[in-house]
Image (cartoon, rainbow, N blue to C red; front, side):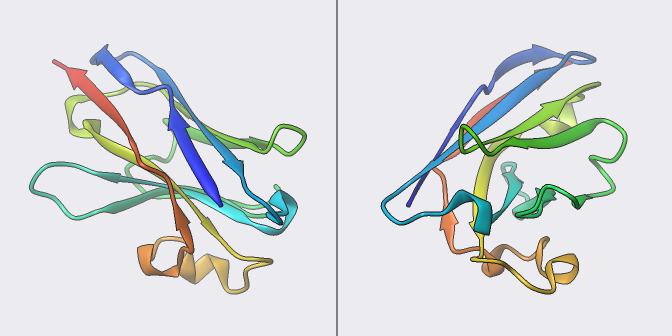
Amino acid sequence: VQLVESGGGLVQAGGSLKLSCAASGFGFVFDDWAIGWFRKAPGKEREGVACIDNTDVITYYADSATGRFTISSDHAKNMVYLQMNSLNPEDTAVYYCAAIGPRPIQLRRKWIQADSYDYWGQGTQVTVSS
């Protein structure tokens, strides 16, 4: 299974970025997997940002992302997106997408725990200048 992030870059405070996560792999059934976004800033622990369940019905957000970030998916393309608005320098980090499944249970509790995830992408850098 491969997860490939894209869309990172340099943006000024107050700006927006849309990250993409492409999922692929032999036998990987995208409809069975929930996808989460995490981030890791220098000197800080990895932090869960958002997650969308495998049915696209339920989404979860960290407090830091609520109201500014939106997670969505396109099952026809095996893609998950993270729209990030009103960015500030504290959002500067490497952003990773990760897959948890198949058909995960107790996602409400597990989504924010990095060790719950089975596959990870390589990450994409997001830098927000002040």
